[in-house]
Length: 187
Image (cartoon, rainbow, N blue to C red; front, side, top):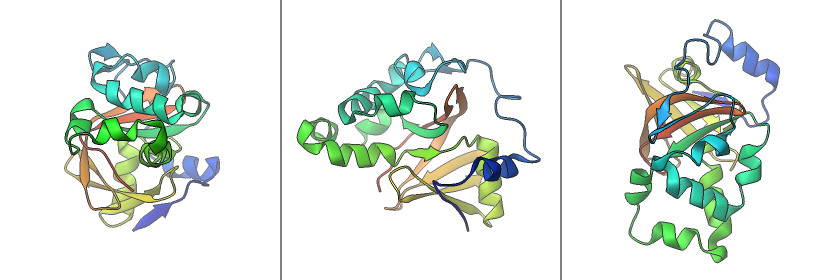
């Protein structure tokens, strides 16, 4: 299993990309997510606020005070759960998490969906292949996510063993990339 840490250097990121397509080169220009085009010239927050499928995520990011971070230079890879993914959580979970008293827990969950650096689906596939079927990425929260592939599908597994599927990959941003997922990951 290959493990990459949050402190990885730009040189290491470039080394990982050798032999892989340049991010954005063969990727769809302005893919549609949640009924809105996602522009590579905009940052993660500027694009996410326009997706009708990510209103819960955007509200949670605002409640956690992470807007400025995710609008910053990055680069970041964000595994972005849809509203439907949040709806799979037990009733009342989201409402409880966005309360000011639970900001630390909410921040930990959200930053567990963020990895420093830009990892396209091709990069994630290569990482899994290098690790004999799975690879690990250290999140901004600090705990690892496990990445695996089956066919052309990319899967992300959290510390509790829950797996989410990347449903829309390679949504390029000015400060990284978003991969839409169908589950909420938990450290």
